[in-house]
Length: 191
Length: 191
DNA sequence: ATTGGAAGAATGAATATTCATTCCTATTAG
DNA sequence: CTAATAGGAATGAATATTCATTCTTCCAAT
Image (cartoon, rainbow over all chains, first blue to last red; front, side, top):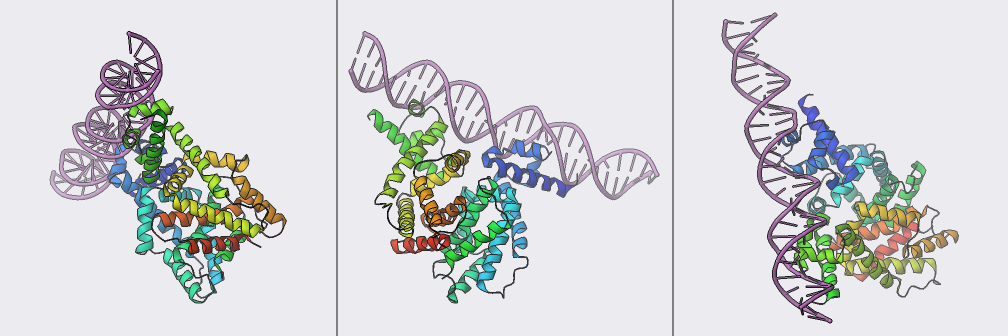
């Protein structure tokens, strides 16, 4: 196996195990076994488990945003842009359940809160698209004049919750249902 | 210290530590120390850590629902009832940040998913109020005709997200802002 | 073209740490 | 004095991390 392949195998194995069993159901020994790699090998690519976990998250974000922003037309009306982003996001989550589950694990851990703080105070790529859209919408009086954080909650709260429920099998989301759900989110934030 | 006091101290200490640091930042030894109790003493009151964790959750639910259902008038219009429940819930979370954080920790753990399954398939007290309200609203054509699970997501998704953001200090929710947020949730589910 | 061997990569057994749980002793209440 | 209760050190299982060793690769010298 070539060098980058090994790193990729470790990443894949870790993502899989953590997404399915949480951080605690993924001891390094198990990750190594799933990656067909010696336990010590992981430490040649990642300084320790924390580093592995956060690099995994960064990889994931980089994979995520390009797909979602594909075909995104910054000149369309606010509503249309919101619906496009919302449905893309939901589709991504539903089509990549492992990524989604990992994301949730990460967010509900000490790592996640720290990361979130940076994102809200400083700024991160990707979210800026949403931020701009919301700010633009508010200035055009198309979107409710609420703090950004609340607009985020009204939009992503339901999307995340629904994606989770779909993946856990509590509801089945087809394209039509996704569209109706994102529509409802829009009703929540529109003036 | 009298017997029931000791149990209460253990419960308080466990809730505090788990809410603040997650299940992993709350080893039994630390809980014992915070409760000013010997490590072995905990096992006189709780068979093991799992039992402690689930009993903690049940205690919490019992404390939660009465407060939220207070002054709930089942004969008012659907919209009014929704706003009442939503604001009560948000207020409870914001005024009991430890309870809220514990709830989140619990839900994002293997315990939580199992529990959730029961709640959605079988039935649990408390949530029935919401279920009835939604079903009634749908039948009156006041609420969008979406699966119950999605209506839940549209309502609780934002409420939970906002409560979390408030507790983590990302936004400051006063009564007015809470009302506006719950209003926005209503816009999301209303026809 | 072949070979010797150096540099780097991989390994997994050994180690150190953390943690839930147990169990024996001390303390208290009746 | 006895029985119940509390305490916390001891235990053992689970886990992250290390490290001495083995394996691979690749190139220089013949």
